[in-house]
Length: 333
Image 1 (cartoon, rainbow, N blue to C red):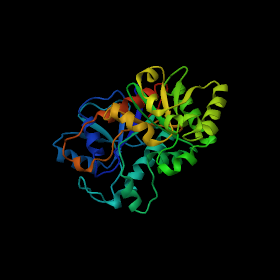
Image 2 (image 1 turned 45 degrees about the vertical axis):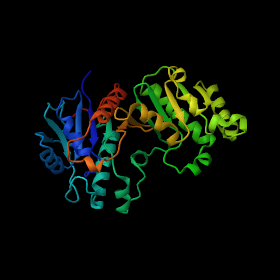
Image 3 (image 1 turned 135 degrees about the horizontal axis):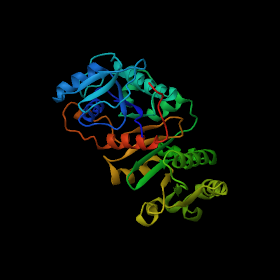
Image 4 (image 1 turned 180 degrees about the vertical axis):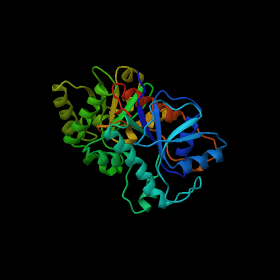
């Protein structure tokens, strides 16, 4: 299979994202990986880490046609707004962070990249800069004109997708409507089929309430919203099991016979997945016309520039993007 071209964004410049990108240069990549970042930032961070990395400038005017050799990185130079010190946030660089994401997302839409991989951003400092920003997922959904996206985290042996994401717990029940549940379930089914190559995806669906509502005694969302929606989707051929109590769904006897779990809210599904695979998990955005994967951790400001980091999650994110785009070709250089 011929190599494909991918974009990698380092996220918050004061965090560990630039460090992770530089550590990738220690080995060879099977595909063309373009880091969209400030070349000066990467050079300074490499010096701080004591790494010898050759930074090779590339751009849409002259994309490379082969993966870069070990010890080097392709860089699409994107200037910082102000100098960076590891671990010290500066709101003046918020626009730089969003510029890297915009370049990567638009490059995917144009066909320059088969997919994009993202290192962590710091939502707080972007908002402090006066830019409304709730996360990568929402930003890229807007950039690609996608009305509904689905967050899914995956680690070997478990995939967990979410009906709702970053909502206060008191708002979750009202947000789980038949329309939202149906959209999310269809997107999950379709992308498991088309991007993960699963011929007949089997999805386990969590109930919202303890014991999946206990027949209505602990809540009626299962009876009034979840069960009727799943029944309607089954008529269209989706293999959906549930709603099941979340406290027993995440057990081997259930998980060994499913391809993904659909959880109703963020902290219903993700603590289990992160316990199972933290450091070896990947965040995948489903439903968009582009492929986007990300690490499962934050900016780790206290570790930036120290060399005490692990590339495990980034490598999983890269491998997942490569697998998801096996049938996709980036535009010839």
